Image 1 (cartoon, rainbow, N blue to C red):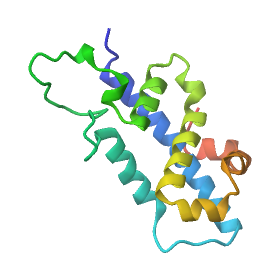
Image 2 (image 1 turned 45 degrees about the vertical axis):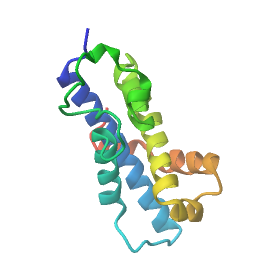
Image 3 (image 1 turned 90 degrees about the horizontal axis):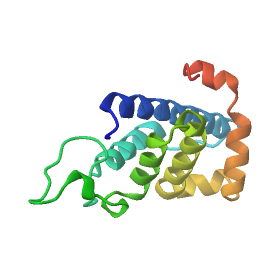
Amino acid sequence: MPIQTRTVLNKLNKFMSHLNVCHSALLRHMKKRKIQTEFELQPLLINWIHEVLFDVNQNKLPLLGDFVLEDGKSIYSFSPADFNLIQRFLIRLIISPNSHRRNFQGALSVFGYWLKNMAGDLYNQLFKNDEDYWDVLTEIIDPVSFRQYKIP
């Protein structure tokens, strides 16, 4: 049975809240390290997430929205190859019965992927490697962050 639209949107909303916490943690780390950028990170992140969800210019299916199926193709015939890497990750998160427990880890993973691949110079300035990224952000993110964004 397909998952209800409301459930998908609620789970994506919670994921996006966790992504905002990651972004705020990064800004705190940048301030502490006295590193500035000539551009705003959040609009770039939001635009990238939009492109991922709707698969702008990637020739994959959108995760959200309407699309037309080819003649004879069923919605049940889709495979992971029909979606991009981040969409597949989000699909697994959305359909997981424990997604509420995995949102933080998922948001850190997606945020790290975005930062490393879309703002690699900044990533390399801030972190020695992926393990350092995880250590730094998980240390910065605290219960205050979650209360600020009203994340349960």
